[in-house]
Image (tube, rainbow, N blue to C red):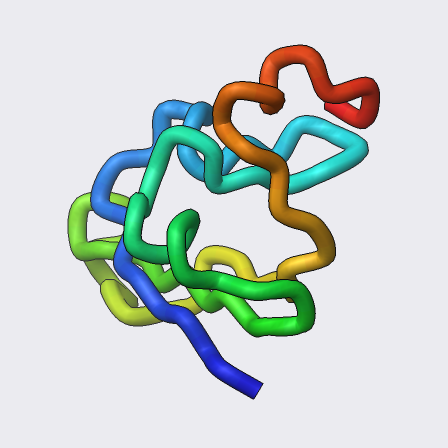
Length: 79
């Protein structure tokens, strides 16, 4: 299993999007969006601005369950 990792330095609610029912990476991390495949793991860490006391703590983690082309994202019935 491939594991994708990145550091979140700003969290304004848009990237990643945690709104139910799905967590999405639509507007962030183009390398992950282009390369990640179903079943792969994504692990996001806090950057220092988000957690100065523990800047490398885990912010969120998940497994890629689906890939939606950007052109279809805003019209997807699940979101």
